[in-house]
Length: 185
Image 1: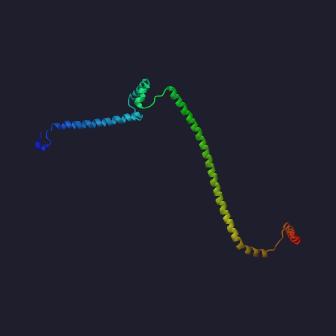
Image 2 (image 1 turned 90 degrees about the vertical axis):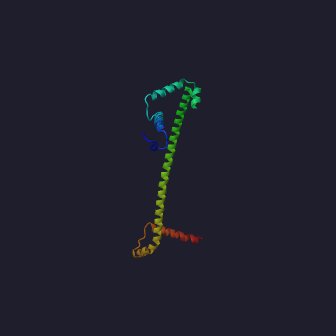
Image 3 (image 1 turned 135 degrees about the vertical axis):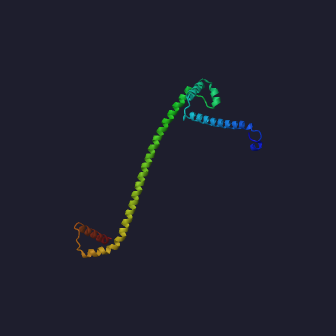
């Protein structure tokens, strides 16, 4: 045995092993309860299955069927439905689902129309941009054309001029009609 100086001032050594046992036992119980609770929660969500848990769950549900609905409602806070109410709710649910499907198809059709229209609009915008570029090029050519016109006139003077046979009488008639109009006035 150790001397009182080696033990310290704590006093009696007899009480120490009991306290250590209690601490270890409470720690072990806490760990076991945590594991048990975790397994029960996982079993409730059917991630893990415990042997006979399904039987116990079915037994509980079958017992609940024979219980008074008011007791079940008071314990769970949920309303217990009769078979007719349940069937009517199921039929209403199916009807609502079919209505939603119909509306969803209509929405999809409208969305496809909108998408098609937006694509057409984008294509038209591209066409407009291309036309603007072409118009700008034509205007630039017209601006460059008057500067090039004197060069063309010089080239035209050096080349022999041939009158077009179809245009010559038409020009003559237009000139004669223009001459007669001021004379009459």
